[in-house]
Image 1 (spheres, rainbow over the protein chains, first blue to last red):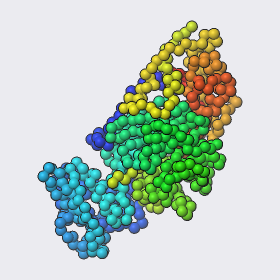
Image 2: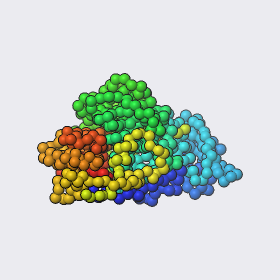
Image 3: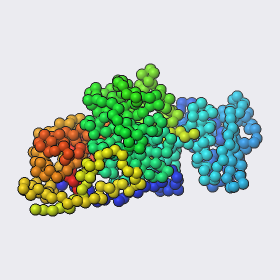
Image 4: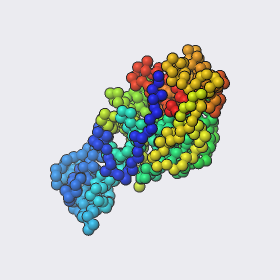
Length: 431
Length: 170
């Protein structure tokens, strides 16, 4: 007797939560992602981030969030200067900052507003050049300490590295706990996790809409793979591809109006395009093998995995149609392509002596570098600034998320106690 | 003549193959259990629906196993495929869902595509033996529904399979 014969019960253990809006619905501590830094940049930028003036009035700290973000990025060393604030309105002693070994200092104050809110005012100084690098003011409610902290960390990161920060972004991932699957959305630091979808059947391949308001994914709740689009603020879901056979691997067009999907309605797994509302399906490409895992690049190409040449390799095809061009050449298993937002780097999974590892290819030089030394890496996903790659891997037989910088130096691991985490997708930068 | 009440699952699904579903608000998961219909087992043939769950009948066996990286039905699976094809021919009102599965190694989406190839091979074999295309939907579960979760070759072999499910069983 096979197990599937017993699967008569209705799938009632299933409900929707309003993700994003309801941070208070964050799950118990057991479901919290925790992040561990396992590798850092070769040279780290020493900075001083004193507590903001008046910060003691808030129930939760802002500067702790800023410090944790910068530290976790692997690019900064925080130099502790004790509990005294350095108010935003006062010119800091930059010689003293240098004497403590720091190259930059952030001064800041929380100015109480009449309605109970605050204005976070802050300035960043280069202690070497003895000059101000910039200033900003962000209004906030006391409950917005994390969001504002991430924004401030983005500001510091951008001023000091020249790259946009990614701390105020979100990630999506799937947690498997026993027979239960949850599609969750959390801040990029793993906090504020909220469940968007709970199911007794698998959920795979979440993909963020370019505006960060919707997730497309594949759910097996109907005992076959079907593609849904889920609006995070309302929990509203729509079937966008449910044809005879399997429906999978959604990838948003850069303008958010269409999805590339993989359908088997005409035979083998092949690439199609549908509107984001599920209308107007058209075939994108035709091959004699499997075509799957499309990624719709901002360069107008759709990168995908195909075994048309015998082994799974990465190809690209213009989104407007045309001939496919092979992109990966080393090895006999290269899958799951993701293009960086600037279109310069391609991240993918390569099989290297039987181990599945994250690799990047510089598309201009075709130079490929393997970034990890693990064996079961899957589902790479770029941070919006293209510097970090989030991926799923395995640690002690359990699914965990990891992130690695594109130079391979900075490493982080994100785990949830007593559960498997998998299928990560890093959300877009919303300005 | 036996009468059985079964959820009219596949009949509904096959008829509703269009892409654009209605806007749903999270309750759509229940859809498959929603409708019921009366299905009459073929009486003339003598092979009734009860045979599907009779442990002494070959029809109670539903899995076809595959070798690593293979999409070829092995000779030992032939009697099973023939029995189910005969049942589908004798019971033209019966619908079947063939679910293809893979082991866990490699990309989930690529494995989903490989599982589809296994499901398609089973479907084609059934059709060669007389089952109608409209009776069978082949889908893939990829590596997502392993029957065995250990990381051993024996386990991987058990997970590389196609399962044949009839209306009411999924």
